[in-house]
Image 1 (tube, rainbow, N blue to C red):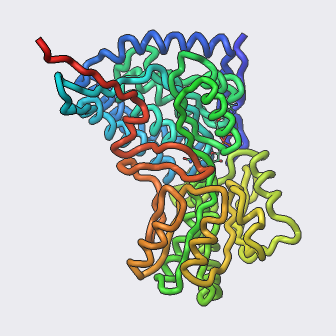
Image 2 (tube, helix red, strand yellow; image 1 turned 45 degrees about the vertical axis):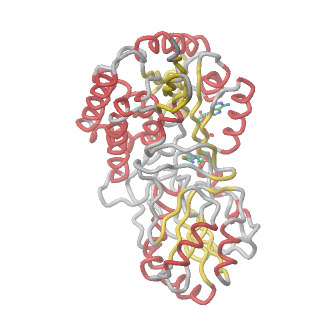
Image 3 (cartoon, helix red, strand yellow; image 1 turned 60 degrees about the horizontal axis):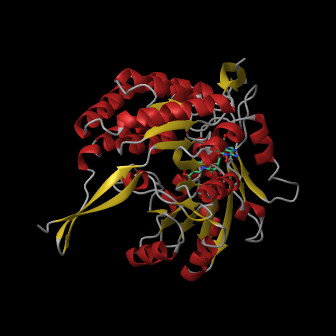
Length: 455
Ligand code: NAD
């Protein structure tokens, strides 16, 4: 008998769908089919693999609005964000569709023969996806993995499986052979765990919490299985006194409250040079109160609800009677797992709001004295995923960028993820990089072949 789990709309609390929770036997069966499909997929010629991925990308584009609307219902994302997310899957597929025909090896000068390298696909790749960005994070795994000649089993988060299921249908419609790309819904402890323990899954790509990620890495170590980890963050938005303060303050809320703060790259700490702290906070208040927190189906909506009642409770628990809350936004009345945009000024840098990822719309603001202090404070967390630096001094921007222990920095802006550039974290934010021109190397093994020319 198929066990189902319910998927709920976080903005309305209405049931959206009931989705199968696969059993261990069903997962093993899917992995066996994926392994068989690898036998043919790896031999599809590079040109044909490229053509199939281009067609897949075009179909995602044709269904962009459908996918976006589905994500709004499933994850409570604003419709503007959800359109960007579906567009990102299209773009990442198109970008890596160029890869099969450019997966170049080396010819290395050696004595006595010809030496060449090949980038061989790994086999079945298991991609484990969290609930915060279901579409993009899936695409960053499956698109380069397929392009390199692997087959993919993908496990979406239990709370947000619907767009991944639909995207896999579009892959089939585009002409991907049966079982080359399968989406397996269900529990992390069953489906995800099996990707780690099954000997026929050659690699695991995990995005999620640092806690589960380190457990996944432990299991992969026992199997000597390669793993990419994209984990949590506590990124800093560092504002120097010489910056365009008005622009820094106007944009700061969107760098942390986008997706209701459920973003691994959220700048959930704002570090401000002491001499401009008061001016900055005054401008920040106007900006925070201006964020439109409303029904995510509206084109004007800038922030929706949190993903679940349980997650809202865990975010809310960070604010206690002793928390120094300096700015608080509002939320719509009625159903939905809403939480207001909240700005706090903690008194110490070891306050949990300066150290822990709340994964909600809470930002901590703290002053610093000088450049050295800014770098020290920025690095004073276990994480190192992303961050922003606001200054008009180019030399300082470069020095501070080099000093910060984080994988993705942005100067006088807040961007983190561009599919053309590598993405990933230092320290407890992860292991390995996704996206960019080198991502294919994370889905291949280098093979060296020497051919003797001796007669
Ligand atoms: P989570 O760690 O609870 O779950 C992530 C995925 O792992 C889910 O699909 C879950 O079902 C699965 N899982 C759970 N237990 C498992 C197990 N024992 N073995 C294998 N898989 C298992 O994370 P979440 O709550 O879904 O997502 C939020 C977290 O993800 C945050 O910490 C956030 O920072 C992080 N994140 C990181 C990035 C990044 O790129 N660095 C991006 C997005 C989210």
